[in-house]
Structure formats: C-alpha cells, structure tokens
Image (tube, rainbow, N blue to C red):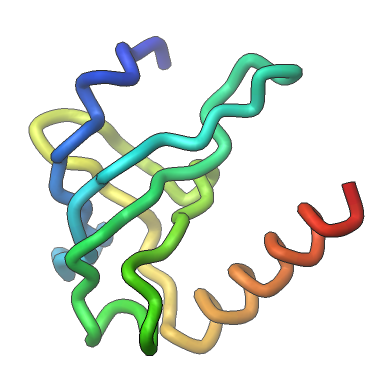
Length: 95
C-alpha cells in the first residue's frame, strides 16, 4: 500500500469493531527499512487505551488494517495493548 505521509496527519483511528481510538498527530518512519513503523496518536479514548498521564500512544503500524477517510486498526484489548507497547519499548532499548 503506497500513501503520502501527510495524508495521515489529523485522521481519526478506529478499531475494526468501531471503537474510536484517537487522532493521528505524527508518523514514525523506519528509514533503514523504508516503511512506517508507528502512528503517534493523541486524544486517546480512555476506553480503548489506558494512557495514564501520557499525552498519547504510539500504535504499531502492523496493527493497521485499512486507510481511507479514517484509519482502521485491529481491535486489541487494553491488556494486550499495554503488553505490546512494553515489548516495543524494550525492542527500541535493545537497538
């Protein structure tokens, strides 16, 4: 799928079950792999992700299932999302 990065900014993100997640603020790009690695999301729905005092979350791009007028991601439980976020942080530390 080929897209312009600028088209993602400000788009709403929903799960494939119709749950609002938030709004894309920034895009994380892996320059070496020449691919999008994550989406920085703000205005997080507290029922979708537990963010605590954080201003947002980074959603792994591998969760994205469709991009159009909105962005759809795989529905994940709050517990699974927290576990995968922690794994992602550990991967970045190891690199």
